[in-house]
Length: 398
Image 1 (cartoon, rainbow, N blue to C red):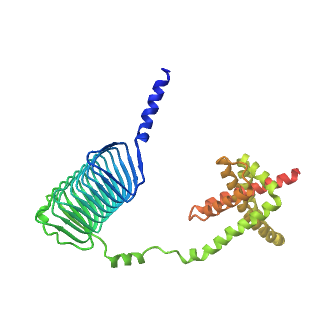
Image 2: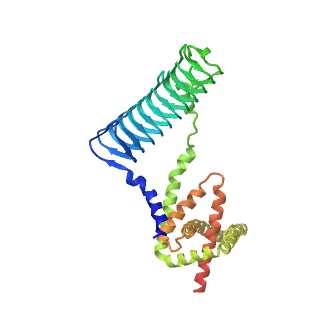
Image 3: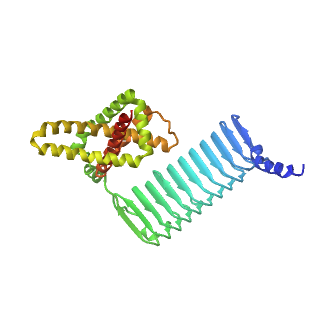
C-alpha cells in the first residue's frame, strides 16, 4: 500500500484540473457576486454573466459575455459582444463584434473584432485586427500596441511602442515608445498628444500632423507609391516568354507520353524490369559506369559512320536507334528514381505501377530546371543506358 501512495497522489494532481472543469451547455449562465467556483469554465449558449470569482479560465462561445468578477487565469471567447469590467489575471483572446475592456487585464489582449474599446489597464501587449480601436483617456497599456484597423484613436497611455496600419490615426494621449504607422488618409496629433520616442509614418502623401511639437524624438516621413505607380510597376513584372508559353504544352505532352510508354512496357515486361531495376539499385555504381560508356560510345560510332561515306546509311539507322534509346533511357531513369525513392522511405516492394509515374514526373521536372536541368538530364540518360545494359546482360544470361 505504501508503494502505491505516491502514484495515487501523482494521478490525483494530474487529474485535478480535469475533475474541477465545469462544462455547461445551458442557454444562459449567471454567476452571482457571492459565488466562487474553482476550475476552468466551458460554456456554450446565449448569455454568460460572471459577477463572482472564478479560479480558472473561461472558454466560452455565446452571443453575449459579461464579466465583472475576478478571473484568475485566461479568457478564450467567441461572442457577439464582450464586456469585461472585472479583473483577469491572464490573457484575453477574443473573436467578437464588440470588445469592451474597462477592467484590469494582467496579461495581453489578442482580438479579432469589429470594434475594440480599451477603457481599463492592460499589463502586456495588445494585438488586434479590427475596424476601429480606441484607447480611452483613462486607459493604460503597459506593453506594445500592434494594430491593423480602419480607425485608431489613442487618448490614454501606451508605455511601449505602437505599430499600426490604419486609414485614420488620432493621438491625443501619451506614448512612451516609438510610433511606426502606415497611414492612408489622416495622422493627427492633438495639442494634448505626447510621443516621447520617434514618429515614423508611411503614406502616399505628406500629411498635416497638427502638432508635430508633441513628438520629443525624430519625425520621419516615408513616401509610399501611389496607386498609379503601383499599376505602372505591375507592367514591369516579368512575363513568361513566348518560347516558354509555346513549349509548355509540348512538355506536358512529353510527360504524358512517357507515362503511357512506361505503362505499356510495364504491362509487357513487368517482372524483367523489376529485376533489372533492383539490380541497378544494388549496383548503382556499375550501372552509372556502364551507362556513361554506352552513352558516349553511341555518338562516336555515329560520327564515325558519317565520316566513312560508304557507311552513311548505317549511320542514319544508328542515329535513329540512338534517339530511340535516349527516350527509353530517360523513361527507365524515371522508373529507377521512383523505385529508389520508395526504397529509401521504407517501401522496397512498391509496385512499378506506382513507382514509375512518381519517378518519371520527378525526373522530367528536374530536367526542366533552367541552367542545371541539362546536367541532371545527362545523369538521367547515363543511368537509363546503364539499365538498358543490365537488361541486355540479363537477356544474354537467359
